[in-house]
Amino acid sequence: MKKRRNVLLVVILLIVTNILTYNLTSWGYGRISKDKFAKMNFLEKFVKENYLYPVTDEELAIGELKGVVAGLNDPYSEYLTKEEYNSLTETTSGKFYGIGVFISNQNDEFITVISPIKDSPADIAGLKAGDKIIKVDDKEYNASQTSEAMKAMRGEKGTEVKITILRPSTGKTKDYNIVRDEIKEETIISSNLNGIGYIGITQFSEDTSKDFKREIEKLQKENINSIIIDLRGNPGGIVDTAAEVADILLPEGMIVYAKDKNKNTVFEFKSDKNFVDLPLVVLINQGSASASEILAGAIRDYNRGTIIGKKSFGKGIVQSAMRFPRGDGIKLTTSEYFSPKGINIHKIGIEPDIEVDLEKDIKGIGIEHINEDAQLQRAMEVLRDEVNK
Image (cartoon, rainbow, N blue to C red; front, side):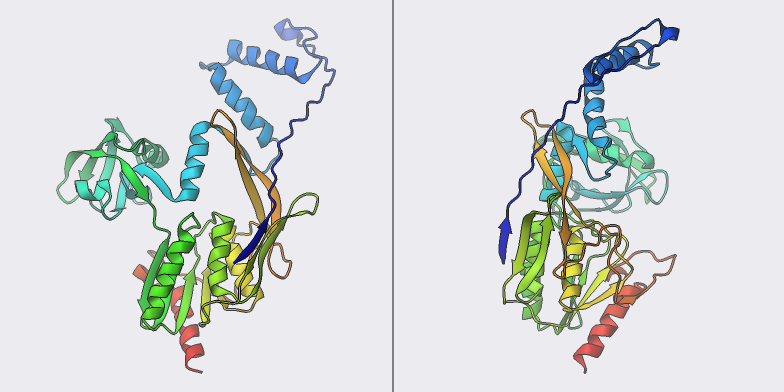
């Protein structure tokens, strides 16, 4: 795959001096500011003196920085603390340090273990699907605090965390002292469905394209005659990785390109002439966004496969992340991307070629729920018909 990138992120803080006059007679203040810095100093003092609850200088400083970016009214741009930037890095790398367990808050008031990741510290320790996590390091958590519990279970490699679970099958609680280790989140799910190769992509992290290539080569050795790419619920991820996956599936040509506010091209990705030339179906839904829409949009523009499911989310803009010297940073919308035919799908989404609804009481989608997944079933029907032409 050929690519050309010219990415430049410049953060400019424009300091505009305004003469502002305030007359806060009820608090005994007169004219207090001639520029925004004096105004901010007054505001901080006012909050400290009158806010009902304790507040630290650090909390105020973080709030001020977040407020600068929040003023853009862009849900995808934000100031990030050091911890938040580290979390962003973990998300895109697909790797983190923790105990390795998938959890859910959807069933009852408890945090429920969906499954431990195979060979992870949680798996080795003996945590089981269905266990209820009620404490982490002796602090109680309920279903509404799933994110906080997940954060508490993560930590530095080699450190120990105490997990208290309730096992419904016995009605008893049990403590597990588990040593954290590096956990790699698998983003590829593959299976041979009687000659149809199925590959689900949960997100686009650093290793996704490498794993995708490995799995598709494995399926080809099993003599598959067609492919289903399942992007349902895929929120996106790294653009480079999505383009690398597209390169495996597309003939020579443009995959995606992006332009900044000045209409300058900041990156473009092109595919080479080598590709897996098998009948193809792509599954999308409302949860398919960003990088997954780049892949689906390119396949649509080349008429390379059939898009099945529901209209995608519609995120056609790109964020750049920059880390500051102290570890904090910024994630800022800096460009918009276009499909090979020059289409931007922001706030529009991708319409499927074949729209298929799911039953409202469906328990899940994908190969584990193939008997009730109408979208997956339709994809298989379309490919069988195409192969048997």
